[in-house]
Length: 282
Ligand code: HPA
Image (tube, rainbow, N blue to C red):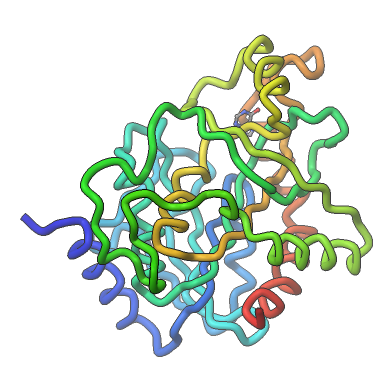
């Protein structure tokens, strides 16, 4: 039996043989945001199915491939699609790709997702910088025996690790400034994660608002926890695809969630293209 560290090392070794590039920055593309991967230059696309031990998504609208290439000259590893806990995957499976990215050499991670807007000032299509999160999924990605070998940054890989600066303030400021340069205002917000796959009830959304949440979704927090365990710097971006349940008087519908992604994809792509070289320069 190989352990998780060995499996992640095998996957990273497999990927590093596919390209001469050494990615320093990783990007996880959420629901409806996968199109950005098509703008990666010098791209080598590797289907998740080919990567040893890699989990594969069962959700429609989530492609499953890793695109290795450059954005604005910066070597990147872009994940087009992710797996979710609601698909029945274990925490170590959900976060396996982040472990692999770190072992591949990635030290900065841009995590994106589709989210419901709890803050009523967000309109569908808004891109919001995640300032902090509330994990209400009932589990934690660092659960289990601690493996300090995952501490790729000196001083990390600890049993108990800090989450006060999980979402890097400097990277968030770069994102907000880049949006302003491109003519729009990026707000920031607190992302609350639920397990899913059912959307929330209106009563849950009212409760989450009282707790301090601005956005709700079913991903991201586990990846960010694991990223912080390994010492990666994180920027989180949410695409608000819909007002959260009960915020307006209409039912929630996955197809609408996907449709908003398609419309926002251009603005999102332009943002990331300008942002990646700035993040890499920090
Ligand atoms: N709730 C949870 N996850 C989501 C939502 C939502 O309203 N929209 C997109 N992902």
